[in-house]
Length: 101
Image (cartoon, rainbow, N blue to C red; front, side, top):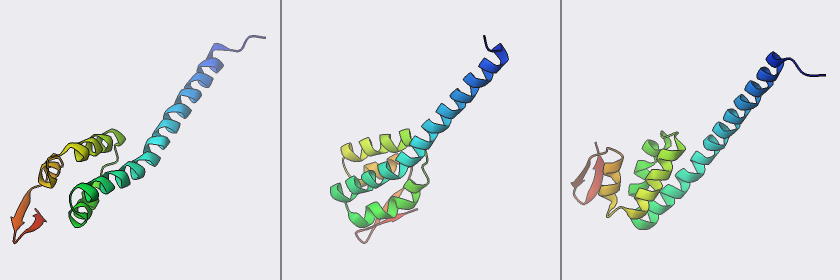
């Protein structure tokens, strides 16, 4: 017995919604992992304390693609200041310490 077209559309819509929700869940779960890798790269390449100073700003980024791009930038940045500029932060060197405004 063939199913009603409206029922088939309802099932297709439900499957699509589930898939979008599932994908969104994967992205949300991946963000903290990418964030920790990003911070590890910053700490290894530059300075532990400077990297941790960026943690609050980085934690506000909920887009997986943006975090992945920042991870790539962290691997390639010439120095910490160059990486921080990608976040739109200004760094002042005062007494050898980096302060964010």
